[in-house]
Length: 252
Ligand code: MF3
Ligand code: CO
Image (cartoon, rainbow, N blue to C red; front, side, top):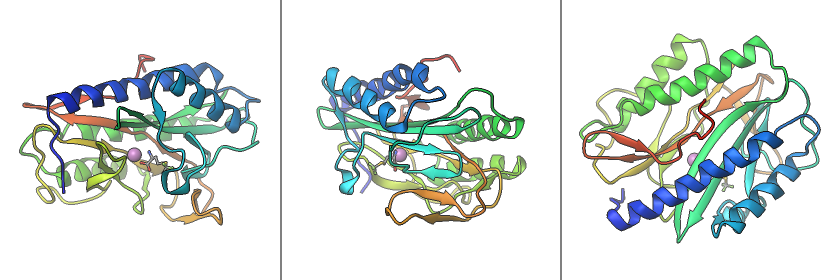
């Protein structure tokens, strides 16, 4: 069932989304060579809780941490550990914050130090694929319009689409209906309506599309070892378009 949020719920979702944005902004200067992914996780949890919010990933289906920190060939759900970031890594921080029960969710990929041209290409075009999807968000359009736009952009730029994972509705639950795949057919799927809130999140690779799940049952990596990028926003469907509830505060 796809939920429609009322005005009060939308206000709370805006607050949750803004806290997600602020947490990304807070973490950004720490994403440097030498810091462990676990330290980033601790900083995020403290920041979120100090601000009266909940780090919703902790305990979600048994997930142990506040952040998903996915380095290089890890696509999603990298569990923070003692790995020290190093020059040339690309790292996706994905985080979910709850405010009075309502959730906000956003991911972006950061470069550590000097990153290769290929990695810059991957990051730039994965983010652009997200915005191509977002442009399709308005009442009357369908989920397949978003999926198709992301897919076309990824294909045009020769990037692999990780198909096992997709975007989702969001509200009181982190994952609600509908699924929002990163590939699909125009004019198919559920119709978008004012008051729905969805997450669009292309996960693209600079190589093949195949991924595997590690023994920890969370970490998803590319089979060929190629790097992956992942950008995600929480988006409210408005009367005549959309509003991004997790705006980037770094002007990028
Ligand atoms: N943004 C991620 C997702 O939509 C957050 C999930 S992490 C989890 O899949 F641990 F909470 F599952
Ligand atoms: Co998500």
